[in-house]
Every structure is written in C-alpha cells, then in structure tokens.
Length: 291
Ligand SMILES: [Zn+2]
Image (tube, rainbow, N blue to C red; front, side, top):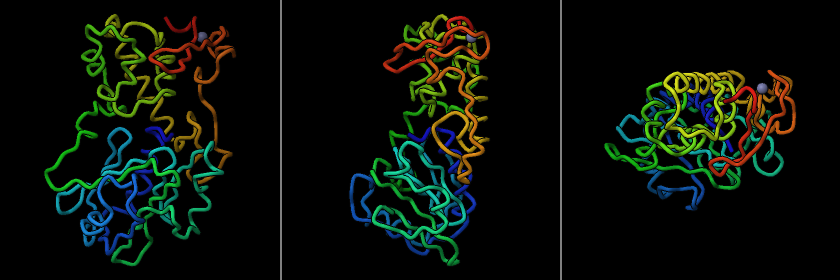
C-alpha cells in the first residue's frame, strides 16, 4: 500500500509534467469501480483543461484545474501515476503481478490497465494512471463542489504540530497509536510511520492519548514529520517497502527502528523489540526506550 511518502514522491515527479500543460484529450478505459466519476463525464470534463496545481492531502492527489474544478486521484494498492519523463515508485511486494518497475515506465505503451491517458496540446510526454487491481480511484469535482473523502480528513501528516495533537488527545481514552492512525485527526499517517514516530518520541503506543503531556505531543509531532520527510527524501524507500523511483535498489537503506523488528535488539539500547496488537494493528516498540 503506498504510504504518504510514496504519494508525495509521485506528486513531486508528476507535477512538472502535468501542471501548466493544456490537455488535448483524455483517454480512459471503460467504467469500472476505478471511476468514481463516470468515464464519459470525466473525458468531457478534462478535455481542453489545464492543471494549475497538483496538491496532496493525506494520500489523495488533487489537481486544481483552470475552470475551478478539481481532479482527485488515489493510488489505492498498486496504482501508478507516471509518464515517460517521470517514473512513479513501485510496490516491491506487488512488483511481479501488478506494478511496473520504474525502468519499464520509460518505454511503456498504454495497455488495458491504463485507466487514464492524458494527451497534451504540446504533443509532449503523456501522463498515465495505471492500476492492475483497480483499487485506485479517480473523482472529478465540479467547481465549488466538495467531497467527504477530503472534508473528513484531518491535518496532513507532514504539517502536524504540537497543537494538532494537544487538541486531538484532550480527554481521549483511545490509545496514542489509535489517535495517530485516525485519518480525521492526521491525514496520511500509516502504521509503519506511527510506530517509528512513537519510537523516536519515546512514547509507548498503548498509552491513553488523553494522558500525553504537551511536551510528549510536541515530540511525537516532530518525530512524525521527521520520519516522513526522511522517507520522502529517499523516494519513500528508506522506511516502507518501496524501491526508489529511479529504480536503484542500491539506494535502498532500511532505517526502520522498530517496525517489523520484533524479537531483534533495539538499535539504541539493545532491549528486545516487542510486538503487540494496538488499535487493531500490529504495533512495534522498545520496552526500554519508550515509556
Ligand atoms: Zn531501546
């Protein structure tokens, strides 16, 4: 599952090939659950439009169009947004059956899994959205229209600060881990990043959110941003299960401290990393570094 860093990496790579170029024509596959907006409606809405910006909120990519409409894209499990000029990251565990390797994207010819194909007026590189399993989504929002998918999202995980967490944790009986995974509090914080951030902040995942001190909220917010930013710097490859977008596995460097390290020694103190289920998710922590 692409996490926020992979989505942000994709955004940064696709922005220069998408933004500012007038769309001559959008080609689509036929209607399926990939299309939250009907394919025909989508094609009519996009023809002749220009994207002014490509933003990200949580794991949604949002293109602001020149007529005030917005295009929402979600990569789902195996969705890839790319062009021959800018590859998109791939999911290692799904490579063989679903995702294109970054090196294959440069010579890519649209196939039956290419649900969106943007042709531009300048006849330059096309932009593709390809998704074998179709868990990805596309939604067109008419000017002025909003959507619950965006409205219900909390602060973007990269912008979370002490105040966000102080406010969200107040009087909460839920665990701090559950609070971090609650998308209405923090948009885009996945399981790996929650565990890693809590390790760096020195806070146990199973503690009640309502009992966090202001200082701890600040430490968690800082740690979360740092873990995510570090992962974006490496194209999403340092922490998650992705390879870097340029396909160089040599750049892969595992920086995980607790996630998927149960039974191994803590790299800081040597204690054995533990795993237990918190907030219905496999949760990893150091019993000595985290209190
Ligand atoms: Zn430790």
